[in-house]
Image 1 (cartoon, helix red, strand yellow):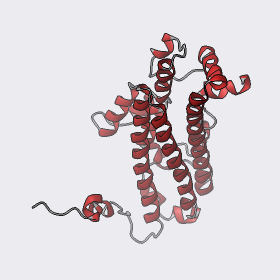
Image 2 (cartoon, one colour; image 1 turned 90 degrees about the vertical axis):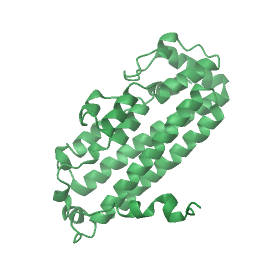
Image 3 (cartoon, one colour; image 1 turned 135 degrees about the vertical axis):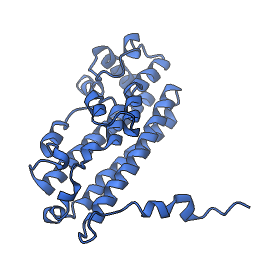
Image 4 (cartoon, helix red, strand yellow; image 1 turned 180 degrees about the vertical axis):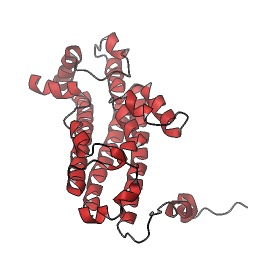
Length: 261
């Protein structure tokens, strides 16, 4: 008989709990730092899983389940933001006790967050080139580079519902930035005025866009609170770079139509 599945075996707790290895057991706060960032990576994995699912649901025309999936992503984003509150219980002096041991390690190197940006339409070739050829991270980013984004899935869904989305929008270069389009804005304005179901779906993407912007802002403030304007670990520009990512909407058309409604 096969061995019974237990809680520990199902979750692989022995392996999981062995992955927290501070570089110096003397520094108390390093354990918190490691666990928080490992948990972030796990949540990023779930968010990517859910966005991929939402994209497939939209492409197949299943708006209700896509909305439900996006609601789950939004709830996870709230958890991601709230975890910064925990990280902020660590004072600047406590972080400095082990910061040097991070050496070149930096959150800037999170390939899963870059994958999330790619999935939402914010693609940057430089982000791929930071990772070694043949690595898991590079392969995953290369794949997402060529995949349609969540925005492309929304346009395909709206076209499937009979909205006159121009063919050039449906066949756009998915590696290019999502640029505002007066044609798309006209369609979205009509959706908001006369199609409550699909307008609600569009609002979930606005919620998602706002949630990512909230995460970016709180992340910047956490970094500034911890290290001020110092350069980040791994030689990154720290909060100076992070501030350049603020106030950049993922789905500009959904914001631009506000003045037209």
